[in-house]
Length: 206
Image 1 (cartoon, one colour):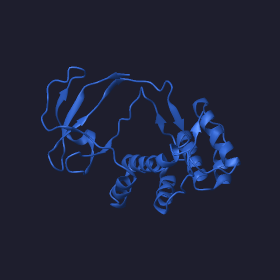
Image 2: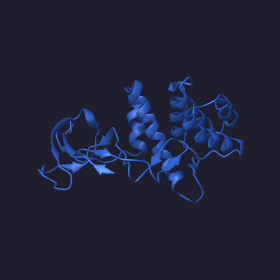
Image 3: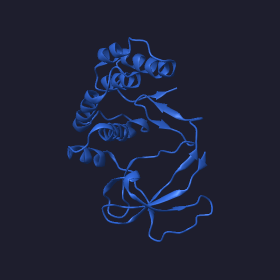
C-alpha cells in the first residue's frame, strides 16, 4: 500500500480542521471478505465518505468539506495546528442520519450499507454467542432491500444476503438461481449454502 497526502479540510459545521488520509495505491491481498460485502484488507484501508468531526462530533461528507491544504506523507509537512483525524461513525450515528429522512440516491445507499456493516461488526469479530439483529437493524435492512436493483448482479447478491440475515432462507436462494458473473460466483455460493443450512449471521467468505 502506498499512502497519499493527508488532506486537511474545514468542517462546515464548526470550522474545525479535519485530517483525511488518502492512498495512492492498494490491494486486497490477504484481505478478509464477508458475506455482507465488507472487506478487511490491511493494504487497502477504508476510505469513508461520511465521517464524524473530531471537534464538534457532527457528521459530514468529508469530500464536500472545503480543502485547506495537504500534509505530505512521511515528511509530515506542513503542519496544520489543531487539525485532527476524523472519527468513524458508529451504528447509532448512521441510524440517526437515516432518521432525518433527507438522504436520497447514492447517499442513502451508502449510509444504509454502512449501518449494516457497523451493526454486523459485533457479530463479525465476536466468537461468543451472537446477538440477533435489533429492530432498527431489521428496519434498515428492509428499507435497504427496497432500494436495491434486482437487475444488477451485485445488488442481487446483496439482496440475497439481506434476505438470509432476515431469516428468509428460501427467498435468498431464489435470488441466486439466475447465473452470475465469475467474480460473484464464490460469494453467491457461500450465501446459498448458508441459507440452505438455515444460518442467518454474517460470515467470512473463505
